[in-house]
Amino acid sequence: MTSERPAPRQAEVTRKTKETQITAKVSLEGTGEVKSSTGIGFFDHMIEQLGRHSLMDIDLTAKGDLHIDTHHTVEDCGWALGEALSKALGDRRGITRYGMALLPMDEALSRVALDISGRPYLIWHVSLPSPQLGEMQTEVFQEFFQALSQAAGLTLHIETCYGSNTHHIIESSFKAVARALRQAIAIDPRQADHIPSTKGVIGKGS
Image 1 (cartoon, rainbow, N blue to C red):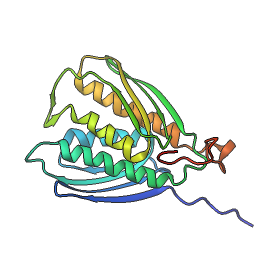
Image 2 (cartoon, rainbow, N blue to C red):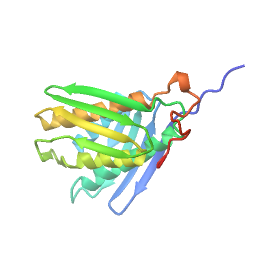
Image 3 (spheres, helix red, strand yellow):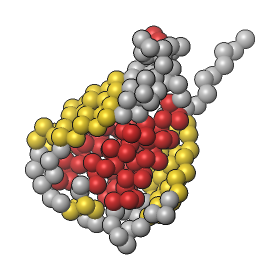
Image 4 (cartoon, rainbow, N blue to C red):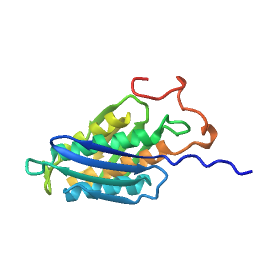
């Protein structure tokens, strides 16, 4: 007699508005394989870091109103990825729930703590020296993580301890979020059949 394998935790979300058309697929039991095509080179590079260091497989395609700026595309990618992550997590049964990371990149050091709580909240203590990075306005990274936390139901704290290079600060933030997510989404073998909350449920508003 063989035991049943748990269903793979994966999901696909399509988001269409007058400003963007986005498809996001995530697989939590992945190897960090990423395909990202958003029309924004540096942002694709950051999504690659998010998948590679969380070991989630991510497939993200986006068409947005880049003739205006990158804001709508980046923010809506956060909504789509967050919704896909939430769907893949299901009822959150067995997850470790909490994750933390302290991550250096050259002169920059980023600190992240997160809780897959069902209570979305972003604390963004990140100072970016440059307002522009490539074709991106650097202020849109806060909007990305705000949308991700709202859609996925994450309590997410991101802080730059120090740093002077905008590229390094942003990249270390993405990598730190990824490492914290890797911890939080992992199944805890000691509570694999339980939802990690004294309420018995993790969901928005709980």
